[in-house]
Image (cartoon, rainbow, N blue to C red; front, side):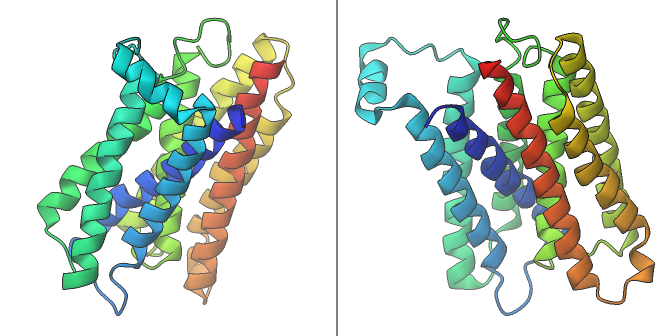
Length: 256
């Protein structure tokens, strides 16, 4: 796998990290018959993303050999991203195990995990802004905003789909709309970057319409829907699909 591996890592990893952040924000104490469900989904999604990212180096033995030989630049954005991703995964896994055994976990642990998740999300975006050979990637405002807001929007959508957040409640509704606005700004800046580089921004336009715009419209109209569970699932699907389309277009610029 080439850039597809990074696509899966930032999409699934960002989705998982974003969900962990907002579950911590909106559910101080885990409730229900399956309090372990969201942390399990987070761990599984992030694990899949990390496995995909590992294939990007083509040879894990070569990667470890490079570390042992001291040829790895630990100051680079991507190396920091990988190291912090490992820390977040371990914290999320510990959280899952404790929750599975005790039906809940220490809130302090979840806060530390959420902080690590936010840092991972930020590094997912900043890792690309020093790739100066790609004018789209190196456009810092566009890249960072679309990566960070995309992960947070998808994560909140996933929390809503699993019942950890109710998009009909004003705090959740306003938070999702605010994140959608930031995501829309990020994608609009990406569209401008694409156009400025003479590239076709069709996928970014599609992502803008499907993710932040369509999901925000549904959230504002949530009072008109009787089945809030179905609404939450649809909103989550729109956010994931829209971000995935735009993210794929982002990585496709490397081959243009």
